[in-house]
Length: 337
Ligand code: PEP
Ligand code: MN
Image (cartoon, rainbow, N blue to C red):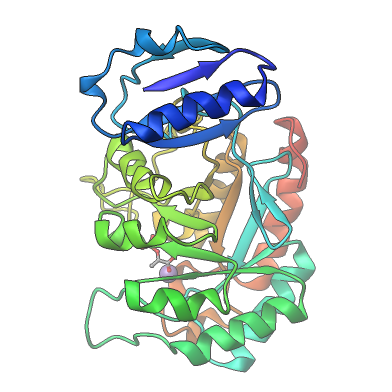
């Protein structure tokens, strides 16, 4: 249920409704818009009649939310969420480009790549320290040593940093180093991990599971939001279909669909979607043209030698060219870079 307060109603009215709900055992999530407050009420609301709350002073209406996700929906928060990661705003006017290697391999590799993507205009540096590899024999990542390098490179080149968290036990350590915690496609329905991430106060980049529907994806975000962490960035990275020409199939319509259903920002990852660097640039252009709030792109200073995802990693020169192209496309869709 959501309770829409009257515009500019007194704070005391909002607090009165909230304390009444809390006293009855509900969780109340407050969304304070520019002129209107909306309360998201979660718990077993089958026992209450929303109309009862419309009699409270300052309440405009109380309605049941028909979607299974509540806090992720536009019903609870009408204005788009802007996630702030170390001063970088995702979901605002500017399209944010996140770039870097799939995996942190060495100081030389990370710093060389970071220097190049920063120079081209990337504002967030990506790099995995814990890798969800399909094979147990493949390189599994540098762990904490990798996180230290990532933080140092982010600081050196003035970028926020994002890295993947694979399990609950890694969260605490990662909070020391990263600005955005990435949940990978394979973990989108790891509900224990999502619940734990609801307790932290750090932005989460939630990738769409490779066989997840949009509803399942928004329900995954709801797990995090219900814990009170509202800073979520959705990331479409392609889904499994019958098509084999690309690694996955990018669901471009997910961008406008999400924009209608949810207030959460959405970025696109053309690297994991296609699996081939020659397909990354056209898809990146399409993501921005479709209204994506940003991009997550794999770049490697020497992709032939990459330990992971080399074939889909852009050369730094290609990335620079892509950024030049985006500078033309972005204003055409009413955004800035
Ligand atoms: C990644 O970003 O390197 C990654 C493993 O992505 P995904 O979870 O989308 O496969
Ligand atoms: Mn990768």
